[in-house]
Image (cartoon, rainbow, N blue to C red):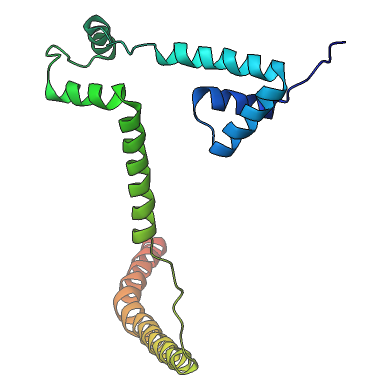
Length: 184
């Protein structure tokens, strides 16, 4: 009688990690003993080890220069000199994932550090009761001075400008109009 054994996704992931050599020592040991006890686990482990071996045997290929030239043409970047230092630095950076990851991590770390260092917490100013009372007195004096200026301006406008400068020409013009209507 054959027993059917179901493997959970989590356990399958551990088998794959062991096959690719990425697992912890404790996981390797537990999978090793489980493979000795169960034929299905042993077969899966061997299949994934074979796949891992095949994947690791695949060689990286160099990107053809024709593809790079097409990218430059399509993006509008001038890439006539494919051996330029600028292009070589980009090739170096993007052909090696570890350098891309390191560069991104350094950039993110620099941004986070600059935000932390240059961020100034906004602290509201704290005033004592004496300072508040002094400010109130100063405001009252300022408003009193402004009130006096308005009173003087009103007096000057009413008595000096309107009575002496504006009223005589208006009175004179009314007199001229009256004389015209009377028909002297």
